[in-house]
Length: 400
Image (cartoon, rainbow, N blue to C red; front, side, top):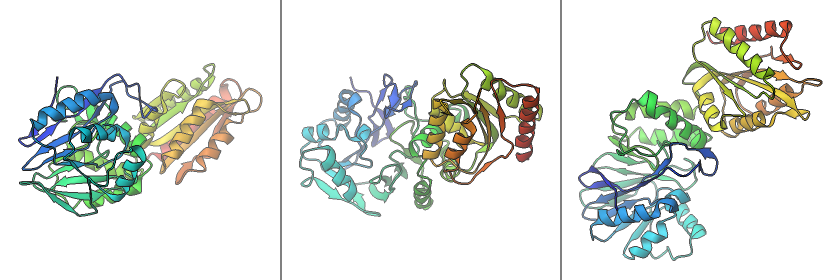
């Protein structure tokens, strides 16, 4: 049975939710699921803005049929070619041979890579600033390359001031009844999954995000319709204000992320000593992660949020413990910078983890690595406890 929701009198959400998928993009845990959003504009001409993933194809296609109500589908706009938004593209076109596909040149090339049907006869190629009049509405197209694929564009409804933002302004999490982010505590309920989505999916492409934000600054935006997560009507300003910080890797607030790997609990003990000493110094925002338990995507999100990072790890096979190695390489891959970092290493006979952590961190830009790193063998003794407390003092002093 169809399940759609009116956004305005002539705009309908006809996406679907997937609460069974364990890993988004086969990489990121999504215990609260994911939504695949698509939108139908019903004007003198009908316009479908993006399609949906194969996993929700039956529901999406049923929603589309209901929303059309027997009308032809005049246009299909492809803002983003990633398969979670285009896997049902051919299914739609088989059902609607009358439909013209609105896309840019790079998207056209990607359609031919993913599919075998003849797209050329249907294609309407658009570039920056082109418009499409549908009756009461006029759509214009804004190129947004590498947010987060090279072909991405966003579509702006000049009439209702609605931005169809592709993967920008998306969040993890299925929609629970309402497709809107209205009436929800933004800081508590919406910001954490939005931050984790941005940092992991888009986070590497800060310069490209800033380019899109600069283009958006000339637009009056009343509604943002992303491809994942809630539709934004309230909290738009709050959300948009986060993006420049994330895109320039500036911390949202002062605080300390302590990420540790610990085989038998001794490195964890060192991390706890530092956390306690920081608390005694009045540091309030302290977040601790056992990187063998918590997926890197959660740690990455908080590393984007806070100003100071502590990494504590044992030596393992003369190298770096594997889960810490994974985390640091994820941080590097996502371009994290502008942070103050402290290191703690452990090793029973030949501590080497600090050297390996520093080697990865040295590949990253604009990090301040504190000189008084701490090395201990096997377990923390009184001299090392003093060093750990001194390290906490250095961190606290650097936060003033």
